[in-house]
Length: 301
Image (cartoon, rainbow, N blue to C red; front, side):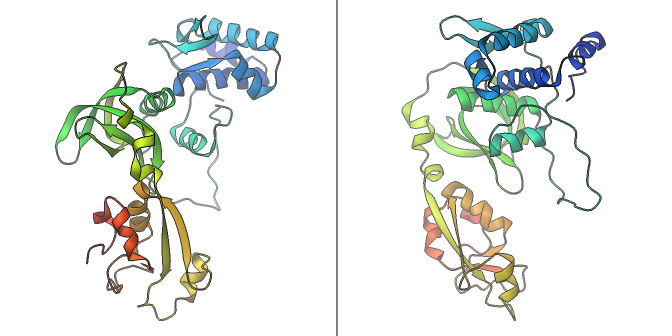
Protein backbone atom coordinates (compact mmCIF):
# COMPACT_ATOMS: atom_id res chain seq x y z
CA UNK A 1 0.00 0.00 0.00
CA UNK A 2 1.29 3.43 -0.89
CA UNK A 3 1.67 6.33 1.53
CA UNK A 4 0.68 9.75 0.20
CA UNK A 5 3.81 11.48 -1.17
CA UNK A 6 2.57 14.74 0.36
CA UNK A 7 3.85 13.46 3.69
CA UNK A 8 7.54 13.68 4.60
CA UNK A 9 9.90 10.86 3.72
CA UNK A 10 10.55 10.27 7.42
CA UNK A 11 6.85 9.83 8.17
CA UNK A 12 6.39 7.59 5.12
CA UNK A 13 9.21 5.38 6.38
CA UNK A 14 7.58 5.22 9.81
CA UNK A 15 4.29 4.07 8.28
CA UNK A 16 6.05 1.55 6.04
CA UNK A 17 7.75 0.09 9.13
CA UNK A 18 4.41 -0.69 10.82
CA UNK A 19 3.09 -4.28 10.77
CA UNK A 20 0.99 -4.97 7.68
CA UNK A 21 -2.13 -5.80 9.71
CA UNK A 22 -1.97 -2.44 11.48
CA UNK A 23 -1.43 -0.61 8.20
CA UNK A 24 -4.63 -2.24 6.93
CA UNK A 25 -6.52 -0.91 9.92
CA UNK A 26 -5.02 2.57 9.52
CA UNK A 27 -5.96 2.52 5.84
CA UNK A 28 -9.53 1.67 6.83
CA UNK A 29 -9.59 4.66 9.20
CA UNK A 30 -8.11 6.85 6.47
CA UNK A 31 -10.60 5.68 3.85
CA UNK A 32 -13.62 6.05 6.13
CA UNK A 33 -12.66 9.61 7.05
CA UNK A 34 -12.11 10.59 3.43
CA UNK A 35 -15.14 8.93 1.83
CA UNK A 36 -17.71 8.76 4.65
CA UNK A 37 -16.56 11.63 6.86
CA UNK A 38 -16.41 9.73 10.15
CA UNK A 39 -15.50 6.46 11.87
CA UNK A 40 -15.87 5.00 15.36
CA UNK A 41 -13.86 2.48 17.33
CA UNK A 42 -16.81 0.07 17.20
CA UNK A 43 -16.74 0.17 13.38
CA UNK A 44 -13.02 -0.59 13.36
CA UNK A 45 -13.53 -3.44 15.82
CA UNK A 46 -16.42 -4.87 13.77
CA UNK A 47 -14.42 -4.71 10.56
CA UNK A 48 -11.23 -6.34 11.84
CA UNK A 49 -12.53 -8.22 14.90
CA UNK A 50 -9.97 -6.63 17.19
CA UNK A 51 -10.36 -5.63 20.82
CA UNK A 52 -11.12 -2.22 22.27
CA UNK A 53 -7.53 -1.74 23.44
CA UNK A 54 -6.16 -2.50 19.96
CA UNK A 55 -8.62 -0.10 18.34
CA UNK A 56 -7.63 2.63 20.78
CA UNK A 57 -3.96 2.09 19.89
CA UNK A 58 -4.79 2.24 16.17
CA UNK A 59 -6.55 5.58 16.50
CA UNK A 60 -3.67 6.88 18.62
CA UNK A 61 -1.21 5.74 15.96
CA UNK A 62 -3.25 7.32 13.17
CA UNK A 63 -3.51 10.58 15.12
CA UNK A 64 0.27 10.55 15.68
CA UNK A 65 0.74 10.27 11.90
CA UNK A 66 -1.93 12.78 10.86
CA UNK A 67 -2.82 14.94 13.86
CA UNK A 68 -5.00 17.35 11.90
CA UNK A 69 -7.02 14.72 10.01
CA UNK A 70 -9.62 13.87 12.64
CA UNK A 71 -11.34 15.09 15.76
CA UNK A 72 -13.25 13.13 18.38
CA UNK A 73 -16.85 14.12 19.04
CA UNK A 74 -17.67 13.01 22.57
CA UNK A 75 -21.45 12.96 22.04
CA UNK A 76 -21.25 10.28 19.35
CA UNK A 77 -17.92 8.70 20.35
CA UNK A 78 -16.89 8.95 16.69
CA UNK A 79 -13.95 10.56 14.96
CA UNK A 80 -14.82 13.10 12.26
CA UNK A 81 -12.87 14.33 9.26
CA UNK A 82 -11.53 17.88 9.59
CA UNK A 83 -11.26 20.51 6.88
CA UNK A 84 -7.48 20.06 7.01
CA UNK A 85 -7.71 16.37 6.12
CA UNK A 86 -4.96 14.98 3.88
CA UNK A 87 -5.19 11.28 3.06
CA UNK A 88 -2.37 9.22 4.53
CA UNK A 89 -2.71 6.48 1.92
CA UNK A 90 -3.08 6.72 -1.85
CA UNK A 91 -6.53 5.56 -2.95
CA UNK A 92 -6.71 4.91 -6.71
CA UNK A 93 -10.00 6.09 -8.32
CA UNK A 94 -10.79 2.89 -10.23
CA UNK A 95 -10.21 0.64 -7.23
CA UNK A 96 -12.14 2.94 -4.93
CA UNK A 97 -15.15 3.19 -7.24
CA UNK A 98 -15.14 -0.58 -7.64
CA UNK A 99 -14.91 -1.01 -3.86
CA UNK A 100 -17.76 1.43 -3.29
CA UNK A 101 -19.90 -0.27 -5.94
CA UNK A 102 -19.28 -3.84 -4.79
CA UNK A 103 -19.05 -3.27 -1.05
CA UNK A 104 -16.19 -1.67 0.82
CA UNK A 105 -13.10 -3.84 1.14
CA UNK A 106 -10.27 -2.68 3.37
CA UNK A 107 -9.56 0.78 2.05
CA UNK A 108 -6.13 -0.16 0.77
CA UNK A 109 -5.23 0.77 -2.78
CA UNK A 110 -2.56 -1.77 -3.64
CA UNK A 111 -0.80 -1.57 -6.98
CA UNK A 112 -1.75 -4.15 -9.59
CA UNK A 113 0.18 -5.35 -12.60
CA UNK A 114 -1.51 -5.25 -16.00
CA UNK A 115 -2.05 -8.66 -17.56
CA UNK A 116 -0.44 -9.41 -20.90
CA UNK A 117 -3.09 -12.01 -21.70
CA UNK A 118 -6.33 -10.36 -20.57
CA UNK A 119 -7.20 -6.84 -21.71
CA UNK A 120 -10.05 -4.60 -20.63
CA UNK A 121 -11.77 -2.11 -22.91
CA UNK A 122 -10.47 1.45 -23.05
CA UNK A 123 -12.28 3.62 -20.52
CA UNK A 124 -12.80 7.32 -19.98
CA UNK A 125 -10.77 9.13 -17.35
CA UNK A 126 -11.92 8.40 -13.80
CA UNK A 127 -13.10 11.26 -11.59
CA UNK A 128 -10.64 12.93 -9.24
CA UNK A 129 -10.48 11.18 -5.86
CA UNK A 130 -11.26 14.42 -3.99
CA UNK A 131 -14.46 14.79 -6.04
CA UNK A 132 -15.45 11.16 -5.38
CA UNK A 133 -14.76 11.61 -1.67
CA UNK A 134 -16.81 14.82 -1.41
CA UNK A 135 -19.74 13.21 -3.21
CA UNK A 136 -19.57 10.05 -1.12
CA UNK A 137 -19.48 11.99 2.16
CA UNK A 138 -22.57 13.95 1.13
CA UNK A 139 -24.34 10.73 0.11
CA UNK A 140 -23.34 8.92 3.28
CA UNK A 141 -24.33 11.82 5.53
CA UNK A 142 -27.48 12.76 3.60
CA UNK A 143 -26.37 16.34 3.10
CA UNK A 144 -26.33 18.97 0.37
CA UNK A 145 -23.31 20.31 -1.51
CA UNK A 146 -22.64 23.56 -3.32
CA UNK A 147 -20.62 22.82 -6.44
CA UNK A 148 -19.29 24.22 -9.64
CA UNK A 149 -20.32 22.04 -12.57
CA UNK A 150 -19.65 22.23 -16.29
CA UNK A 151 -22.81 21.54 -18.30
CA UNK A 152 -22.80 20.70 -22.01
CA UNK A 153 -25.54 23.26 -22.59
CA UNK A 154 -24.78 26.17 -20.27
CA UNK A 155 -21.09 25.80 -19.42
CA UNK A 156 -19.72 26.18 -15.89
CA UNK A 157 -21.98 27.41 -13.14
CA UNK A 158 -22.76 27.01 -9.45
CA UNK A 159 -25.43 24.64 -8.22
CA UNK A 160 -26.84 23.30 -4.97
CA UNK A 161 -27.51 19.59 -5.23
CA UNK A 162 -28.42 16.75 -2.87
CA UNK A 163 -26.63 13.61 -4.12
CA UNK A 164 -27.81 10.14 -3.15
CA UNK A 165 -26.11 7.58 -5.45
CA UNK A 166 -23.06 7.05 -7.65
CA UNK A 167 -23.82 5.13 -10.83
CA UNK A 168 -21.65 3.67 -13.58
CA UNK A 169 -23.75 3.95 -16.73
CA UNK A 170 -21.39 1.84 -18.82
CA UNK A 171 -19.54 4.83 -20.27
CA UNK A 172 -18.73 6.92 -17.20
CA UNK A 173 -19.60 7.54 -13.57
CA UNK A 174 -22.35 9.97 -12.71
CA UNK A 175 -24.06 10.99 -9.50
CA UNK A 176 -27.81 10.95 -9.08
CA UNK A 177 -28.91 14.05 -7.20
CA UNK A 178 -31.73 16.50 -6.59
CA UNK A 179 -30.92 19.74 -8.40
CA UNK A 180 -32.35 22.78 -6.62
CA UNK A 181 -31.94 24.92 -9.74
CA UNK A 182 -34.37 22.78 -11.75
CA UNK A 183 -36.26 21.32 -8.76
CA UNK A 184 -35.82 17.81 -10.10
CA UNK A 185 -33.64 14.73 -9.80
CA UNK A 186 -30.91 14.68 -12.45
CA UNK A 187 -27.70 12.93 -13.46
CA UNK A 188 -24.39 14.77 -13.10
CA UNK A 189 -21.22 13.43 -14.74
CA UNK A 190 -18.58 13.11 -12.02
CA UNK A 191 -15.68 14.31 -14.17
CA UNK A 192 -17.44 17.65 -14.81
CA UNK A 193 -17.32 18.88 -11.21
CA UNK A 194 -14.60 21.50 -10.71
CA UNK A 195 -15.22 22.32 -7.05
CA UNK A 196 -17.38 21.00 -4.21
CA UNK A 197 -18.16 22.59 -0.84
CA UNK A 198 -20.18 21.14 2.03
CA UNK A 199 -23.48 22.90 2.65
CA UNK A 200 -25.24 22.58 6.00
CA UNK A 201 -28.58 23.86 4.74
CA UNK A 202 -31.54 21.69 5.80
CA UNK A 203 -32.76 19.09 3.30
CA UNK A 204 -36.42 19.11 2.27
CA UNK A 205 -38.32 15.78 2.21
CA UNK A 206 -38.89 15.96 -1.57
CA UNK A 207 -35.11 16.18 -2.11
CA UNK A 208 -34.30 12.80 -0.59
CA UNK A 209 -33.64 9.53 -2.44
CA UNK A 210 -36.99 8.06 -1.40
CA UNK A 211 -38.71 10.67 -3.61
CA UNK A 212 -36.63 9.90 -6.72
CA UNK A 213 -39.24 7.94 -8.67
CA UNK A 214 -36.95 7.05 -11.57
CA UNK A 215 -34.30 5.74 -9.18
CA UNK A 216 -36.69 3.67 -7.08
CA UNK A 217 -38.77 2.31 -9.95
CA UNK A 218 -37.39 -0.91 -11.49
CA UNK A 219 -38.36 -1.71 -15.07
CA UNK A 220 -37.78 -4.91 -17.03
CA UNK A 221 -36.19 -4.69 -20.49
CA UNK A 222 -37.17 -7.63 -22.68
CA UNK A 223 -34.46 -8.07 -25.28
CA UNK A 224 -34.41 -10.30 -28.36
CA UNK A 225 -31.96 -10.77 -31.20
CA UNK A 226 -32.48 -8.22 -33.97
CA UNK A 227 -34.91 -9.57 -36.63
CA UNK A 228 -32.65 -8.30 -39.44
CA UNK A 229 -29.93 -10.80 -38.53
CA UNK A 230 -29.61 -13.87 -40.76
CA UNK A 231 -29.15 -16.03 -37.69
CA UNK A 232 -29.87 -14.74 -34.22
CA UNK A 233 -28.57 -17.84 -32.47
CA UNK A 234 -25.10 -16.35 -31.94
CA UNK A 235 -26.60 -13.27 -30.26
CA UNK A 236 -28.86 -15.45 -28.13
CA UNK A 237 -25.73 -17.30 -26.96
CA UNK A 238 -23.85 -14.02 -26.32
CA UNK A 239 -26.54 -12.80 -23.93
CA UNK A 240 -27.58 -16.15 -22.43
CA UNK A 241 -31.13 -15.87 -23.76
CA UNK A 242 -33.79 -18.39 -22.83
CA UNK A 243 -36.42 -19.15 -25.46
CA UNK A 244 -34.98 -16.33 -27.59
CA UNK A 245 -35.27 -13.61 -24.94
CA UNK A 246 -33.47 -12.16 -21.96
CA UNK A 247 -35.22 -10.07 -19.32
CA UNK A 248 -33.07 -7.38 -17.70
CA UNK A 249 -34.42 -5.70 -14.55
CA UNK A 250 -32.88 -2.23 -14.12
CA UNK A 251 -33.62 1.04 -12.37
CA UNK A 252 -35.63 3.32 -14.64
CA UNK A 253 -33.05 6.13 -14.39
CA UNK A 254 -30.37 3.78 -15.78
CA UNK A 255 -32.45 1.99 -18.43
CA UNK A 256 -31.80 4.41 -21.31
CA UNK A 257 -28.05 4.16 -20.68
CA UNK A 258 -28.25 0.35 -20.86
CA UNK A 259 -30.22 0.51 -24.11
CA UNK A 260 -27.60 2.82 -25.60
CA UNK A 261 -24.62 0.84 -24.36
CA UNK A 262 -25.99 -2.45 -25.68
CA UNK A 263 -27.14 -0.79 -28.94
CA UNK A 264 -30.72 -2.02 -28.54
CA UNK A 265 -33.05 -1.07 -31.40
CA UNK A 266 -36.01 0.68 -29.75
CA UNK A 267 -37.84 1.66 -32.96
CA UNK A 268 -41.30 0.36 -33.86
CA UNK A 269 -40.90 -2.75 -35.99
CA UNK A 270 -37.14 -2.83 -35.29
CA UNK A 271 -36.32 -0.72 -38.35
CA UNK A 272 -32.69 0.04 -37.37
CA UNK A 273 -31.20 -2.73 -39.51
CA UNK A 274 -27.54 -2.65 -40.57
CA UNK A 275 -26.72 0.05 -38.00
CA UNK A 276 -24.81 -2.06 -35.50
CA UNK A 277 -27.87 -3.15 -33.53
CA UNK A 278 -27.80 -6.83 -32.66
CA UNK A 279 -30.61 -6.54 -30.13
CA UNK A 280 -34.18 -5.25 -30.27
CA UNK A 281 -36.50 -4.18 -27.47
CA UNK A 282 -39.53 -6.49 -27.42
CA UNK A 283 -41.62 -4.53 -24.89
CA UNK A 284 -41.61 -1.01 -26.34
CA UNK A 285 -44.27 0.12 -23.88
CA UNK A 286 -41.59 0.16 -21.17
CA UNK A 287 -40.15 3.32 -22.76
CA UNK A 288 -43.09 5.26 -21.30
CA UNK A 289 -41.66 4.63 -17.83
CA UNK A 290 -38.09 5.71 -18.67
CA UNK A 291 -36.52 9.17 -18.73
CA UNK A 292 -33.88 10.25 -21.26
CA UNK A 293 -35.19 7.92 -23.96
CA UNK A 294 -33.71 10.25 -26.57
CA UNK A 295 -30.36 8.50 -26.11
CA UNK A 296 -31.86 5.03 -26.78
CA UNK A 297 -31.36 3.95 -30.42
CA UNK A 298 -34.53 4.49 -32.45
CA UNK A 299 -36.77 5.43 -29.52
CA UNK A 300 -39.75 7.39 -30.76
CA UNK A 301 -39.30 6.26 -34.39
